[in-house]
Image (cartoon, rainbow, N blue to C red; front, side):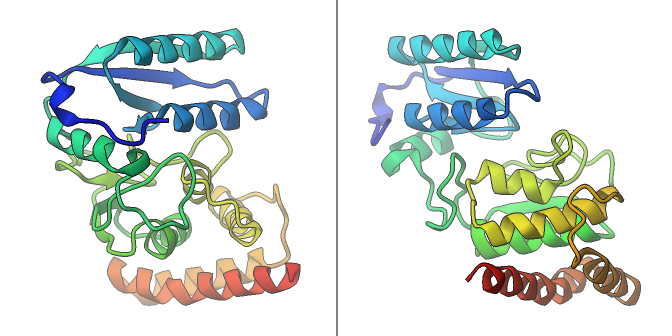
Length: 257
């Protein structure tokens, strides 16, 4: 695990990337890879793209892990990279220089990924179930100082430092059968059973099926539909939806108490 790195050792553009795609089975592989990347001190960039400063040790670590991923039926690429837009060497150096490669996220998010506070989170306008829930989760657990931007569904070019969710080419969006809320839980290591239950409700409403078939689902769907129908603007929608998810959090927490 990389605890602290002297940024003077880096040359411009001297970074290693691991780009991987995991098969749907075995289930344990995703957790195994996430934990290995965390131990290596690798930082997540976009989706399944991770970065380390270029060194012999880092090359060996990434190559070894990529071989394991391919042996399990996945795909993996290791390459050297220079960043031209979206993130700069200075920001990466600062993130690696922070203790444990961190970037100041709230302690509640103890999984593989962290974000520095005050990021701009971008999603499609006219928010509904998954985007309402994900916005609540982001501000509640991942980035208390988050700013939200609501844009057209397609054709948006993100500005430097922005993070997109639940939209095309987003850093955080649906993966397989998981909705964006569930992906955020997984990627940020939020393992509270009450949040998992909320994710199951959100997923079934968003995907219009009954995979989890929780009894709360129909009522939550009606509440969120009412908010969307009565409020045309996205920022008030997000504000009005937050108490719904706070109530669900309390409800599911009490059920297991």
